[in-house]
Each structure stands twice: as C-alpha cells, then as structure tokens.
Length: 18
Image (cartoon, rainbow, N blue to C red; front, side):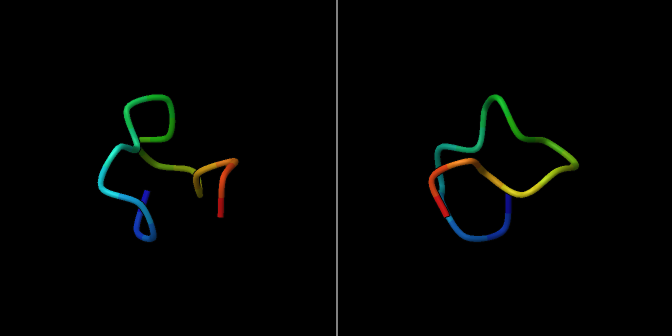
C-alpha cells in the first residue's frame, strides 16, 4: 500500500506486487 499507487486491494497491508 506504500509501494504502488494502485494499492486498492492493500489498504493497510503491503501490496502483493511489491
């Protein structure tokens, strides 16, 4: 949620992409 701008699925958790 802090790495990618499109962290729709990850609001409080880190995005699965990064």
